[in-house]
Length: 89
Image 1 (tube, rainbow, N blue to C red):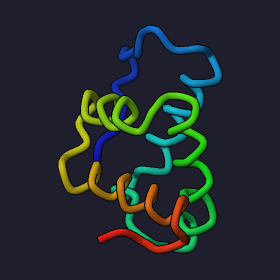
Image 2: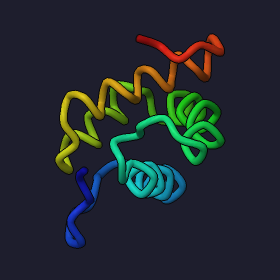
Image 3: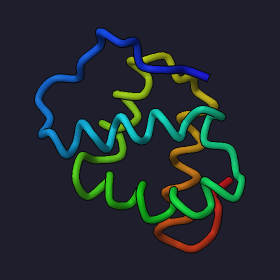
Image 4: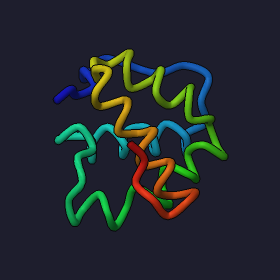
C-alpha cells in the first residue's frame, strides 16, 4: 500500500484532475484489489480518468507516490473491466 505524502503535489493538472488522482490514491488502499468497493467504483472511474488524464499518465502519478508494479497492473485490469466488461489478466 502506498499513500501520497502530505507535502507531495502533482504538477500541471486541473483541480478536478488533482481531486480524481487523490481519490484514486484513497481507494488504492488495498492496491485496487477486487472487492465490493472497487467493483462498484473502478470500472467507470478508470475509464473517466483515461479520458481526462490518460491511463499511462495516471499510472505514472501513482508510481511517483510509491505504488508498485502489481498495483499499477491492477489499474490496467480495471481499465479492461471498464472497457470490455471483463477483468483483464
